[in-house]
Amino acid sequence: MKPAAPPERSATLSYEQAGVDYDLIDPLKVAAQRAAAATGAHLAAHGFSEVAASRGESAYVVDVGPFYIASIVECLGSKALVADEMQRLTGRSYYDGIAQDTIAMAINDLITVGATPLVVQAYWAAGGSEWFADAQRANALVAGWKRACDTCGVAWGGGETPALAGIVADGRIDLAASCTGLINPKERLSVGDKLGPGDAIVLLSSSGIHANGLSLARKLAERLPQGYLTPVTPGLSYGDALLAPTVLYSPVTEALYKAGITPHYCANITGHGWRKLLRHPATHTYRIHSVPQVTPVLKFIQQHANQDDREAYGTFNMGAGFALFVKAEDAQRTVAVAEALGVQALVAGQIETGAKRLIIEPLSIEFGDDALQLR
Image (tube, rainbow, N blue to C red; front, side, top):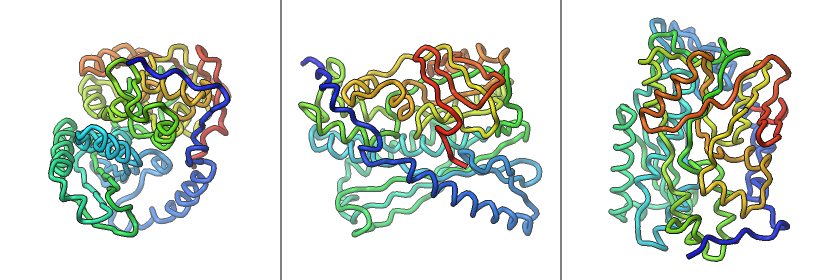
């Protein structure tokens, strides 16, 4: 069966049209951060202090003396809805991969500050007790969760499994994970204080959409001739392509430390797409001279949603799931370390002196300072 042809150019589908408007969400994040900042003083009563530079980063860092503690909580989002529909269509359970996605959302954020993941906790909130009666699905969730923990070398400490009828829709589940890690020795801390002109930008490949942009991806399925069963490439359906598990990047960051490479900064390329490369508040120009190959499902989404490159790269990871900002002399070794672990990598660009902006030269795209307001 041939892949579906792209729709007419008039049928553009943006992330906002799919129901996600960051212009409405981000101000709450900023307000919450400002309120939260005042609570850091409470740590002094225990003899600890916060790392102020971690405010607004992907993980929060506390100085406990001989080392730092980092923590994060993240939810999966709506990817489980795709798994549910594909189970209905195919009879397969995809929750082993969904479990990995959920853990990846937390761990891939935690490692941006230089932390080694230590403990993961689970939050599985179902719309009713009946969700857990599907033994195949429930067992797949447990098995996938454990396997992801083993891949990252973390302990699964426990969790919460509430049945929230009236809050979570009947037959659905809301998945989240929290993660705690150590930054030890303290020199591994990566909050951008050493970030500067001359640093190389190394991008680690993604496995597909990961767990961001699913609201748009699900909306797009309504337009496709066979919905989730529409072929992306011969033998690969749209639903199967969307459900490729998110890459777990902590084995790469741990291997980099063992190789003597400490990134100056890291960015998990999730919501906001490549605009996440602008996350650090410092004023630098980020110049991209090479872009990775776009995974087939993301190319498919861009074509069928009729998005131009600016919209696509400002929404999806477009083949790059994680960014490492390293010394220029460490760039090629960083690529080698990642690829030795089976993660494709690319020296994509460098940081320069100049206004805060991201320039993606091969695509003639530029994002300015106002493209990402998270603080």
